[in-house]
Image 1 (cartoon, rainbow, N blue to C red):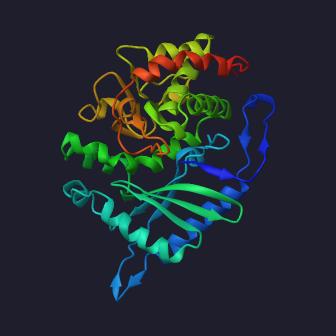
Image 2: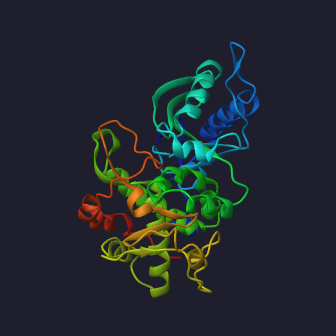
Length: 336
């Protein structure tokens, strides 16, 4: 999801490197207005004496904005609305999945959020533009059942068919944000640079095949960064080698005293064997059932948004063909 800000770019100094970090004052104001509108007015929303609104436990700012890895001119703004009234079992059984809940929020926003401009209603997301005085934001709004803990969520996944588990990748957004909050600035700097490469290699306006999602880029960069740092090698070469591994196995179960970012903080892989996908895999550190190597690769049409939670097609050939060009984007960066 992208944002067109009317702000200048700040160029970081010192240990953060030379990757542009966008100013987000206007964007954050816009996000605040959307969240405030939903939290304060949507739960009690009634139309023709029929209650349309439902309870809102929390709203998570996910995607690049929530992860702190935004690239100037292309910010992923995913807003995830968590509610205890959304039944995970109903979502699993229904052919429309999350769509009935999204329709209710769509009706509300269309009538209550000034600057709202509808774009598309999908099975898992409501896509719209928000025209704020300081910027125009392209938003993907998603909904999720609320679980008290990640352990409760994993237990639910174990009792549903395997082919239904990928429907619930959005539900771990809150723990993904926590995982990213603990990443050091140097790693986020590399993520921004890698996403800049991705945006140049797959311009959204042109469409294409095999475009890696922001989250897949993020997890690959974190792993390659830690490997390169431990070996004192080239980050770009480690990333290229990682992507080309036939039995790719990116997971977060190792406990190394010097590489804390490779330690899973939400689950022990040995306790979630029945959820873990087969290789090749890039396992979501917040959801052991989510193979981001599959869910994070997809084709898209010209002008179409490339969503993070729409499910992937597993076509990796374009990524394998283009990955070596990433070297040019890291020639001036040094591992810190």
